[in-house]
Each structure stands twice: as structure tokens, then as C-alpha cells.
Image 1 (cartoon, protein in one colour):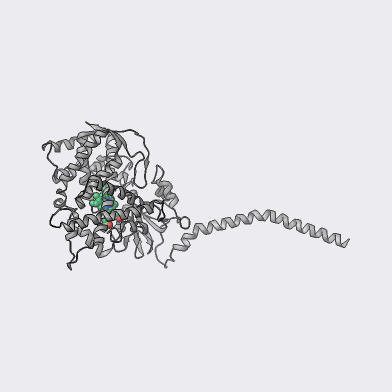
Image 2 (cartoon, protein in one colour):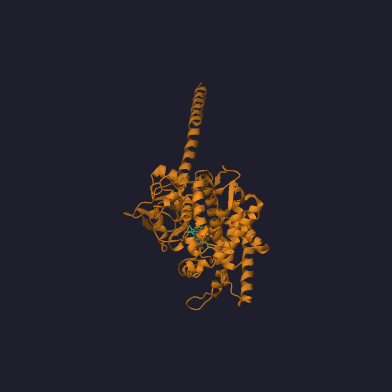
Length: 498
Ligand code: HEM
């Protein structure tokens, strides 16, 4: 009897336990899952955020996403959608429109500077905000590329190269070459009748920059150089996986071929050093510093390389977008044509444009500025913080990265009403304040080729607008924003003489 009662009690107790396991099992699993999520969601804050001193300004509001990947998925989702500005837009919805936000991008704790004022403060302080390209990009650009150099070395190379790129004296000598090249290209395109504009422009801008830097353009060797070069450039934005089959690996291989080709040009120059080419390579070969020391081959080659990269991609997409916008707005195209006709009428058909002609194209200049404002070929730039600083009442910690979000400044509706509308006329009565219009950046790392880029664009558009017409085959082709904003069909057009 006693035994029966005992075994009954035992059975009842076991039933209670198994019942409570049935109830609490899912709850404890849920609790575990929630705890893991909470830990992971806060991991980056715990790991990266420094303990701030009493009285020190707070960090900019924001969200650092998940460990390792941070917010990169949100970034990619926005930039692969038709609305890249939703990335900053979502932050503004959550924390209000602020000059700075905290995030985690490209594997780094990052502050985004999103207003003219905060961008200006970052770009103008080269002592605190150093070049911030990711390591994989630096490897492709090269150790001596001045996009990654700092201090004296950076200033020295900038000074040397700017002699050949800025001001009327330097630029006017390139006009005949650019003009002849662009007339020949346009003529050959008209024979093809239908083609994608973007790759054609890549070829044109690459030849222009190769001509200016190395007096080198056209022919099968140049074609091969461009081919290898394009492979190399793909790696700049690819994941840094150096394994056969991956873009980054192909890019490093292509880089070796490009270096060999440029070294060949350099060696040839040294062997025939009596002939002067009057290009930037001659300047670099002759240049000496205060102690009479010449540049090394590595310095010269990495300098040429960064210019070939920076000097053709951005110009390509900027010209393509001007063509797209003016084709869609007949009254703007008409006004451009009238202005260019006034200039052409003062010359014989074969006569070259002058630097003064280029400076007198005020309407075309407004069209180009408006295009660059909306399109944002360079949507942001990277900096690394060398010393903790305060901006606009927020702490920006040492060792973090800052992205200056030019795109947000250019599409700020308090500065540019109806910011997404293409309105060249807005430039007639508008003078931007520092930081409000910065398609070429600002400060010690601003674009050194800005004047050349504008001149090249104006010369090309002068001839295209006066002599040719084009119509998109797919007028509603969507835009892709990575790696650069462009129509997905490469701007496929029917192209002919007027
Ligand atoms: C429409 C065309 C162009 C645009 C929109 C553009 C835009 C920019 C921007 C925004 C920067 C600053 C990046 C930063 O702050 O880190 C920059 C830097 C630079 N650009 Fe351009 N660029 C263009 C054409 C050119 C051309 C034609 C050349 C060469 C002749 C060139 C050479 C450079 C170089 C070498 C730098 C790095 C400067 C330094 O680190 O000191 N760019 N460009």
C-alpha cells in the first residue's frame, strides 16, 4: 500500500516536471534567442565605443548594426534600389536631420558627415582627418599613390602634378589634342549609328588622360592598357579576396600588367631623353625636391596610375549624365546649342577653341554644375580620424572613419529647393556657400583635376551639341548607383549627324 502511494506520488511529481518543461522549454529557448540577439545587436557599441570622459560631448546618434557586417546590408540595399538616399533618409527619420550619425560600414566604426557645415569641417582639417581608403583599395592604388600618402610626401606630389593641371598656362596647351581626339571619336560613333555611350566615353576620357600624362593614346597597346586597366579598377570596390576566380585577384593580376606597361613607357623616355613631350610624365621625370632628389620609379608609376583612375571614370559618367539630361529637356539643349553656336561663329570650322572660349561657356557650365549636383558621381569620400575631436557638439573618436556624404549636401532641400529636379537656371542667381557645392571635394585632398575635367567635358559637349543628335533606345532604363550612377543599359542610343 505504502509502496503504491509512494509510486503514485512519484508519478504525479514526474507529470508536474514534464508539464513544466513543456511550458518553460519554449520560453527558455525564446529567452536565449532574445539574449543572443540583444548581445549581437549591441556588440559593436560595446566593442568600439570608447568610454567618454565626464563633460565630453556625446557620440552622434546612430546604430552600428551587427558585428563585422555593421550596416553594410542597409547601405547596399539602398544603393541597389532606385532610392539611394533612403540610407541617410532612414537615419533622419529615426533621429532627426542631424549633421552627423554613427554607423558601422565597410568593417569600420564610422561617422557620417551629412551637412555642408560638418563636411566642410572634416575636409578642411587635413591634420586630424587623414586619407581613409580601405587597405584593399590602397594595395591596388599603390604605396606611393598620393591618394594614400600623407603630410610632406602628399604635398610634394600634389605640388609637382598640379603644375601640369591647373591654370590657363597649363591647360591651354591640351586643348588641340583633346579637341582633335573628340572630333575623331564623335565622327566614328556616328558611323556606328547605335551604341552604348558609357563604354565609348570610357575610351575617350582614358585616351585624354593618357595623352596629357604620357602623350600616349590610341593603337593596340593603348587598347590593351585600357582593357587591363578596367580589370584593375573593378577590384577597387570588390571584396578583398585574393583567390583565383574573384574580382580582387583579377584586379591584382591586371595591376601587374599595367605597371609593366607604364614602366616600359618610363624606360623608353629615359633612353630617348632628348625628345621632349611636354606632358606630365616629363615634369615628373625632371622634378627634384629641395635636396635635389628625383622621384623614384615607384613614385612616378603610382602617381600616373592614380591619375589614370581618377582622371577618366568620373569624367565619363559626368559627360554621360549631361547628355541624358539635356536630351530630355529640349529647351535646355536649344539654349546650350545657341551658346555654342555664338562661340563657333567667331571661328573658322577647323579653328581650335581657346581657354577664353571655355571660360565664356556660362550656360553650359550651369548645366554641368546642375548635373554634377544631382548625379553625385563621387557620392562620398573616406577619412580616418587621427585624434579625437568634437564637431557640432558631437565627439568623433580617434581611430574611427568618417565618410563625408557629399550626396546629402547636394540634395539638401533647404539649400536647393526641389533638389531632384534638373534646373540649370537655379545657378543664375545662386552662389553656394563653402561646403554646399563640392562635387570635387574640398581642402587638401580636393580634386586636382577639377579644371581639366570641366574643360574636357565642355570641349566634348561643344562638338556633340553642335553637330550630333542622339536618342535613347530605352528611355526608361533604370539607374544603377554602384559602382557609379549610370543607366543600366550603358545609355544605349541612336546617334547621328544633325
Ligand atoms: C567630373 C570629373 C571628376 C570628379 C567628379 C572628381 C571628383 C573628385 C573628388 C570628390 C575628389 C576628392 C576625394 C576626397 O576628398 O578624398 C577627387 C580627388 C582627386 N581627383 Fe578628381 N574628379 C574628377 C576628375 C578628375 C580628373 C580629370 C583627374 C585627373 C587629372 C582627377 C584627379 C584626382 C586626384 C589625383 C584626386 C586625389 C587628390 C588628393 O588625394 O590629394 N579627378 N576627385
